[in-house]
Length: 255
Image 1 (cartoon, rainbow, N blue to C red):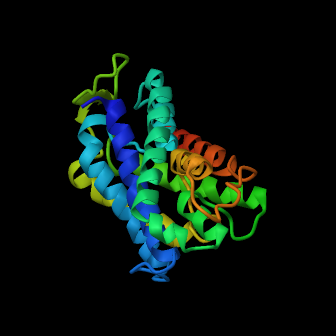
Image 2 (spheres, rainbow, N blue to C red):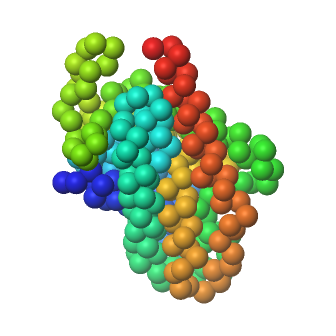
Image 3 (cartoon, helix red, strand yellow):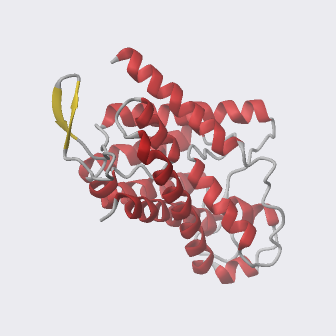
């Protein structure tokens, strides 16, 4: 499978699980209505686990522009593939959000709260303070990317878009990939971030997770939709990239 297609599918899987669990918890007359934050964080963690397990062998399963940029800064990913990966991840996020909307279409129709509906597609702070919200997302993404860099050796895609089976790091040839059993600790890392740092902003920690679904919210037809809150949208896009660069810089400094 093409790494680009794998990133589209992997990110769509992530949003199908993540957006789906939020929809199940917040929309009216669902089986999981009001089941709480623990359910939401587990749903997102399982989305990461399934996406990484399934697509890691094909693309490294970054499923997150912040991870892609962080790996490139750390010298573990080809800069020439960054933009194609980011575009693929954003498209995947959009597709995943559309699938959630299709699955819960009847429940969208009977839920009037505009904010609740937006929460299925994108993040929003509980206390709107852009400097604080930005810092929260930087910290959350920093620990995500820093953890990924040490949990597993990430995949490397060369200039021809080919997935390599090994890469030489510090003179040693090592294998790589975020698939197989490596998917479990990555999923647990995301679970921990959600539990520990998700309260202030909803832990986007992924520009494609927020931007792709937010675009879907803007274009999909359903009643009581309200604003897509574009005024806040820059925070979950820019802050995770900053956190990723800091994480990669520290990784290089300490390697």
